[in-house]
Image (cartoon, rainbow, N blue to C red; front, side):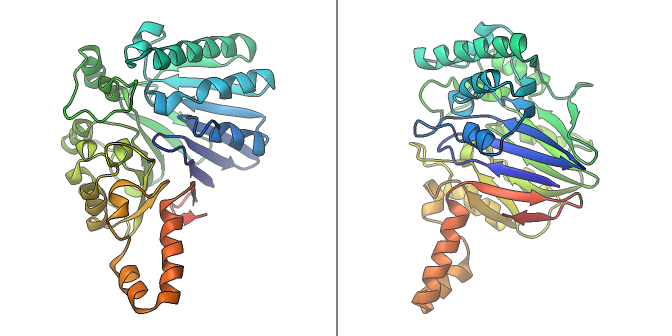
Length: 336
């Protein structure tokens, strides 16, 4: 059994995977962001009394994806919590990471994270390494039933980052160099004939690449997905999401918070709905404020105020706060 939690960290990402394999629990954390002077991922680790963490994965070096990692790693060092691997999409040179930032605050946070990673290597034996798609090491076991595969960044994406290639219009929070989105991961979690996609801030052209490439990476049945870049229209590839084999009402999650770009785009929300996805979000912002969750819910609330209030609460639950899903080895998804 797998549990996947999308933490509400405002405009940013923090995802926790918990894979139960017989009597063993494997923990994988993808991104870690502070929010309102708190660290939701660290709070989750403390609350659940983890003794070890199998994987920390940094999707790409933007502050809204890594601002909580230093505190998390230092806590694990101080409390002798083993972290087996820290995986990232950069090389092991600080200058490479700093090129993803545009101000002193973000650059300083990069250096602090780098120091924490090296301390963890010395004190609790945490290994750290670059990850990349299309390599022999791009697939990782999460136990008997589940595997994690890196589908992005590709070698072409690394090249675009090295050339500081930027796609207009720019929709990045202060301190983030938009070219670093080329380093963003696509993570595929799969078992037998089904899979989950975590897309971070991946560029639209990378999704287009997988439309033209004939391989097994997007074959099978999609059971759960994350919308790229907090629902930005410029990172959305409708033909990609339309092509995927899926069941009716497959959940798609927007990891999003208050932002100046009106993420998620109303067009993206409508596109997912028209393609048969069920919408979930960590915050009801952007296009979610003007696009009703379902036509039936809207009509019912107009007819019956009492029931309408109930429907409103149900909608708010889907569009606000942590989103937690349980997935069994057959691919059946339960909303927790």
